[in-house]
Amino acid sequence: MQVTILDATSYPLTTIGTNASYCYNTQLKDINHARRIAEHCIKSGHGRNLEFADITLKITCSARCAREFYTHIGGAPTRVQASTRYITYDNFKYFIPKFPVPELMEDYCDVMEVIREFYNKMKQYGTENDVTGYVLPLAMETTFVWKGNVRTLENMFNQRLCLRALDEYRQLMLQIKAKIYDELDNEWEWINNNLFVSKCAKAGYCTENNKKCVLYRER
Image (cartoon, rainbow, N blue to C red; front, top):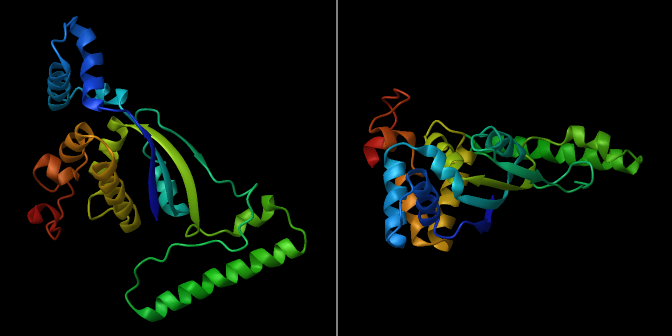
């Protein structure tokens, strides 16, 4: 699993606040004024303003995780993905999940090797990628570029930091969160701290009514 930030709106709160100021014909006094307007809009639940701040990510993960990533469509995100028609995956990499016993992991890897061997056998017989692509597993590693905005990401973090989310997806979101901390400006840090959190942290209680969950209690 790997995340690279390709592009992002610089000082997103300033951008959000500046654009929001036009709604009331507010004359901005300075940059801090724009930021205060942005924070007020966010805390008041005016989520549309969050769509003015974009981020573009290059992500490598399993095809299964990528498919779940695409289910978040709020704010009109866009994406491109490595093709299974124009790229030959004769030695594809794959995600290995957690298993309760080592024997299952060994069997899992054996299954992946069988798929690899059959894929290569089809290629040896001249089978086109239009056909060979059908045997590729959801565990196969894929790379895609995704562009979205803060509003979409907020919803994604709220849902996918929950302990009931797919573990790989949760780890992916934690990696995106860490990348934002390490590489982007202090306004992104504010967004990271205040918006990019689990839904229980946002609500103040477990919205899944999962009494066994320790995530909120650990905060």
